[in-house]
Image (tube, rainbow, N blue to C red; front, side, top):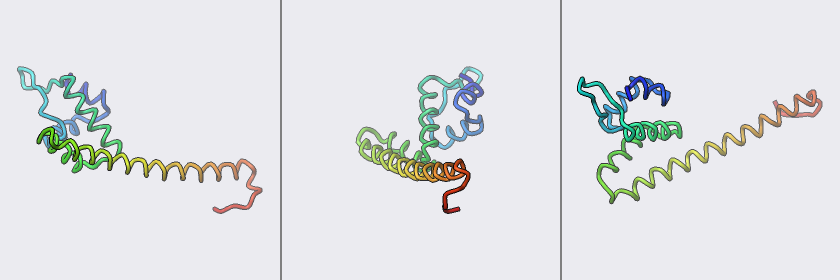
Length: 122
């Protein structure tokens, strides 16, 4: 796949894809005979993984740490798992906060649907 096809498929700009490759978030992308990036399925898998982790709020620095550990080999599995576990915990906390916000919004909407007849907070 060309960089523009990968860009469209994953909703990332070509600049972002080049940046991810440059800093090592994704491995070097295969090039065709003309030197143009030709993303293979495995490379697309890395793009998808990085996009997912960024969507989960994982900082670029943490992803770089994950990639460095991955390159070090199998003995780093526990450390890599801990990075992912910490990110999951942060994401679950964010979800709890969002759930509370939604509950509060629903309460306020119900208040207004009832023509504001009940006393309530702002």
